[in-house]
Length: 484
Image (cartoon, rainbow, N blue to C red; front, top):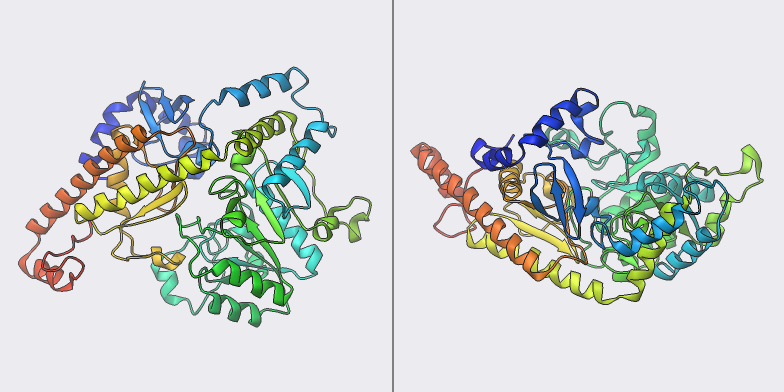
């Protein structure tokens, strides 16, 4: 829990939220819809969203850089999308039969992702990665899938491997091995997943070569977002494409987060790399439940119906291609396709916000590294000057991050998903004025963190303070602040 002085304003501004959350906690685990939505001292409850802001049940107007976990690139309550939804509701909310709208949606998203020659829809990013991995296994004839350490590919069992673990586990580990996240995931699943190091092409190649008889596919977040935001370095994605092609391994890009965000065509457009399969979601639904996967025709054709239980590959879902979601998603895709300036403008705001956060942290002499690409970014409170892998995030000062985050939220700026391993998102509806205000609030948060660090140094025993000074190297004669 954050220090009381950092959370005091937040608590004072969210008293009704506290009451409602306690009520919810009696009837649903944690009082929230999913584990990631819970945070201490308690979550706030939303009333409605508009543009780049959330209005909560206490009447606070909160500048939102979480934006529906990244799904709302056009902001809350976009009127054009809402009108399409209303229009579709007049024709039926659930039909259960293929519609012309479904066909039109797929043709539209193929304009953004030309690599997807054939496409299927589902309802969440979790479903998209689960089915893409199944399709890849069916096509390759090999059971094992390679996954980057620290990558998040949804809440399905096969993806919950080496998503997160602690220092003690890392110290005991020799190389890269699957570590199951949480209870309830069958231990046998670990044997179907091979872990490789993101941004290390030599290490990745070595692991794939060691497992080449069993690994038929590799899934990757092109921008590693499981531990926050870590961008590909030194043409890692291009080298990975060449490596997997040479070895006959199906390359799956999980673009649930990056698709339609860092570019209209996602990371594969931004980094000029063509995968074999692509998973998409979030922005693709225009704020509604829609996701999907697609790729080379010969790979996707394993889903052709009529092959029977022995030779077929199964994909189903009652709400696949749900007309309301498809109507919303199609309108969102059309808007983004017609307005390339949205990407130019929002990416410029991303540079303004994230580079501004780095400058402010440096000015306050707070050891931090801000990693970002386009409109997604994260602040790591660390002495490292670059983030290349999941393991680079070990040793970040989570308490300091949380004190800064809750201080900002107490001043009505939500700097992304409330977890040190998550990230902030900018939307096409945010403005320069929003960014300027956010930086003012962030600076006050950095100042408060720096003030607490100074007080801790002043209270530190002489020998301990001397040890801190001797170990400090980042700021010359001034010691780097110890952990808060």
